[in-house]
View 1 (cartoon, rainbow, N blue to C red):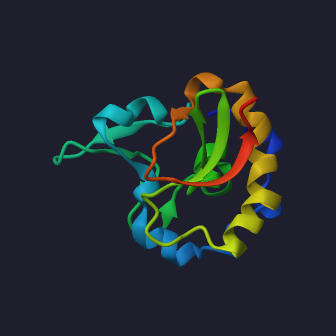
View 2 (view 1 turned 45 degrees about the vertical axis):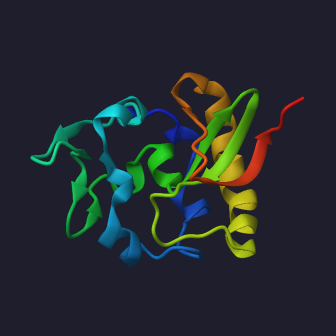
Amino acid sequence: MELRGLSAFSFEQMPLTPILTNETCAKCRNCCIFKKESLMYVPKGIDVKEQSDGQFVCVHRNENAGCALGKNKPVECAAWPFSVSKRGSELLLVLECSCPELKGTETVKKFAEKNIVPLLQGHSMQNLDTLREYDERNEIIFYILPSH
């Protein structure tokens, strides 16, 4: 399966472990669950299945081991809980409010600016149609494309 954006990305170059452990992520997996109204934001190449509670879960989610795709996951998944949102003419790197572990401390902001912005900047510009509108519950970490 060909997943968009993977060729320009290497997990070895950008592990989230300095700010978020694999164990912590594996316990949560909020990033793998979607509400019906947010299905348009499921990364291309990823399939989801509906659960009895009406939520949709990535088919690669493993309750015990995390993501079955491992190092082959889409850029959007690899960068989670960071994402790019639109606000008018601005592109914003945000920290998703659905991640219960990370808050926008200076350490997290510096890590994101150094590691996440380069990863998502070009990818986002090539995939503007898939970006979410800014949700005020999310914390703005960096202005990728400031307003003019």
